Length: 210
Ligand code: B1M
Image 1 (cartoon, rainbow, N blue to C red):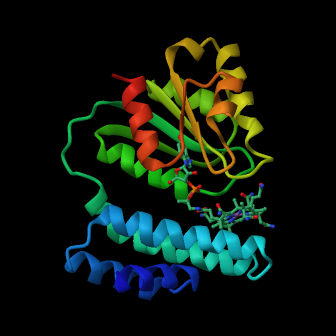
Image 2 (image 1 turned 30 degrees about the vertical axis):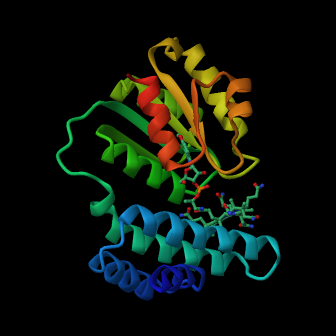
């Protein structure tokens, strides 16, 4: 338990090396990767967001915290992703136009991979036209869009419209997620599914692509 708290603190303080050391130590002690992810990394990052909202920290601190989380995640990744699982479907996923937040999206991508999906990670700042091009090129059964800013969430609807205009909407299921996104919003824009977190995204993907 102390180790998880120390991991959380390392993320909040933006200490990448310490976060990596704590994850490594905790794994050696037999703590599950999923527990370290949820109770260490994600809770640490939630605390960072709260401190930012309260004006206690600013963008540079938020950035170093994100780097610490990313470094620790890279150690956790092989433990989260089961190797050699047969692919159960193709997913293309990206963060919407104007948005460079990618920690949560990468986590979702990683968990989908772990669940056996072949994942095309389209990166950040993906325009509606780029999402359409990716659907044409990779022919995924599922398209995932992530957005963390209230200003970039509307790009999800724009992408659905672009898919419709390109005649591709009925060829791909669409799942949306990200902190400001809700099931009600997903329903409103006509997305096929919503994931509240990485685990939820995997459940939704499985339900959409049985
Ligand atoms: Co940004 N940022 N940020 N930021 N940042 C937020 C989002 C913010 C809420 C902070 C705050 O004010 N409290 C706020 C948005 C406010 C708003 O729009 N209402 C904000 C702001 C304002 C900004 C800037 C504008 C700041 C500035 O420059 N003035 C700027 C914007 C840059 C841009 O995108 N154009 C900015 C920049 C940054 C950093 C670069 C410093 C860094 C991002 C680094 C990176 O991603 N590589 C950063 C960070 C780290 C955050 C916070 C602190 C943490 C985000 C995060 O990684 N969370 C965030 C505050 C917060 O969220 N509490 C904040 C951890 C991650 C695991 O969770 O991303 O929610 P999350 O993903 C979850 C679920 O949402 C879900 O599953 C994931 C795993 O559980 N999910 C999906 C996500 N995508 C999904 C897709 C799915 C399904 C589920 O299906 C496809």
